Each structure stands twice: as structure tokens, then as C-alpha cells.
Image (cartoon, rainbow, N blue to C red):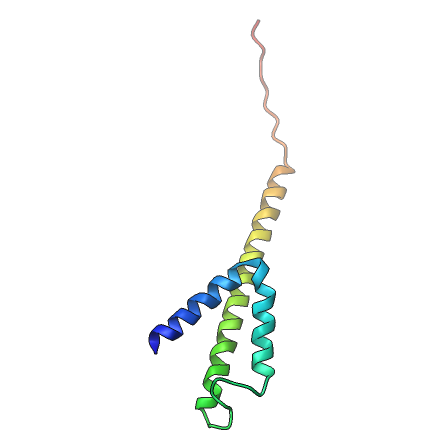
Length: 96
């Protein structure tokens, strides 16, 4: 059972890292969470909520890591642009 959960987790993370699949994975996760059809029905107390809570955890953790990556990237790009706006003048003597 642990192998199945780990395989699904790895697949989900790898799919979220690929931009062409990211929207489909997010949309599919939201549809699954809102759909009355579940792997374990919500009529069974606690056990029925486990699959939903795991998917919510996966979705939130992956989206937060993506947003952190985007914010770091935009911050680094902004820092590079800020540093390039300050020109340094160097005095050089020409020897003939």
C-alpha cells in the first residue's frame, strides 16, 4: 500500500513540474474534490475524508512550492536588473 501512495505522490509532483500538464492536474484535482465520486466514499466517517485531505495537501504544497519558485525567480531577475542599471566608470590610460 505504501508503494502505491509513494508512486502516486511522485507522479503528481512530476506532473505539476511540467507546465503543459500543470493546468490539467489542478483542474482534475479540483473536479475530483468537488465530485461526489470518490475512491473512498465520504459516507464512511474519517476514512472517506482521507483521500480528499491527501489531495488537498498535495495540491496546496505543490502550488505553494511553485509560487515560491516564481517569487524567487522574479526577485532574482529584479535584482539583476537593478544591479545592471548602475554603471561603473573605469578610468583607463591608453599607451601608444
